Image 1 (cartoon, rainbow, N blue to C red):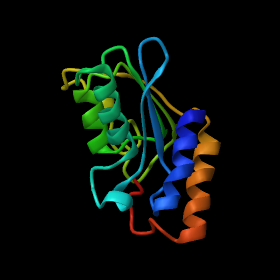
Image 2: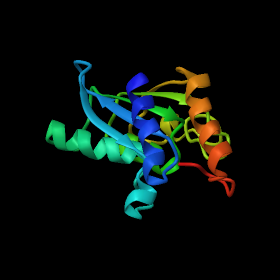
Image 3: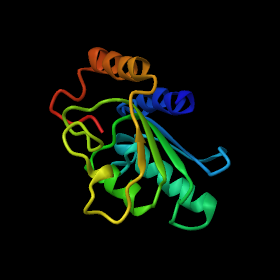
Image 4: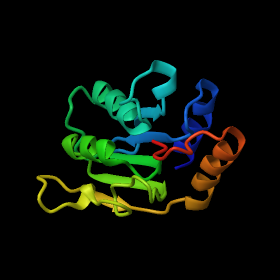
Length: 151
């Protein structure tokens, strides 16, 4: 989670919400890193998880990320949860809960939906306070994100 927090702390330099993510390979090495880049690239899909999944797929050499663990500072939204399921990630670890748009148990639970063909293990609340503080400090300083989802 500390590596994901390092990514999150770099996001505000481009005006992005500080959410960070890393994907760990089956052996625990980092195969993908990402932070929010929506503002930096004008890309609505450039959430930290999607950026990290794309890099991990390039590193691994295929879209299936079986055996991998995705670690992210904020509970994934529905788009990111869908991408995680489609990538066949084995485990998702997240820090802070997102009661406005979370899709790993807060608002929805896409990651554990029995109707889907893949359900990763979910570990929540890892360094939750620190992850939440990074976000709340950003919002307090910028006033950004007052319209809803922070992803």
